[in-house]
Image 1 (cartoon, rainbow, N blue to C red):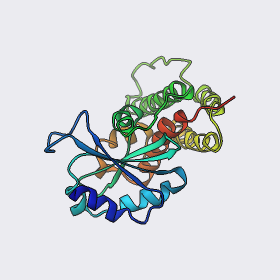
Image 2 (cartoon, rainbow, N blue to C red):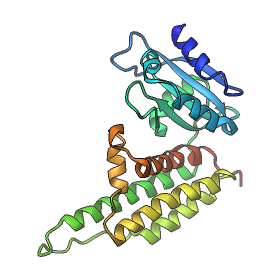
Image 3 (tube, rainbow, N blue to C red):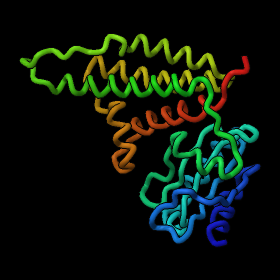
Length: 238
């Protein structure tokens, strides 16, 4: 009851909010029982929900035993999802579809795999690989042999693949997914052209350590989260 009271008090300003108490199939080791919370709001209220969760102070977050997941919905379909942290300055972290699915479905929501999910996930994986290759190539001594690369792993081909994946989505998600993919594509394009302080591969590794994240890293991670959740969950009706 105390956890529910904390959530409802802190989120009372979010319209059409629903708080689901669910059983966590993989509860963290530090919790007493398997209780988890899934907080949902319509997609139009996502910014309000995000800000309300971000404003929850650290001492209140520590009292929320169990995982707290926030989800923007279109009807019963979960579009994108984030997790409320218990410690640290980073209040919210995006969730991958695999991480979100058990709790989202426990709340009676749908997180379908749309036709763009596999292709967009592959684009993201390949972009991270390109980023990592660029960093490694610059670290190699100049007198070492040139490493042969997979010719299919090119920025031009990945840009085309991302465009095709976005055309499989309904609006406004197609446009938003296009913008998110452009953030990642443009980032890797800069990395291939010259050394960058922030890299896509580095951002993925920094996701494991919130204290290492800056604004540029957060933007990349949010783009990955949107493409992995919102875009894939809303296939085109065509």
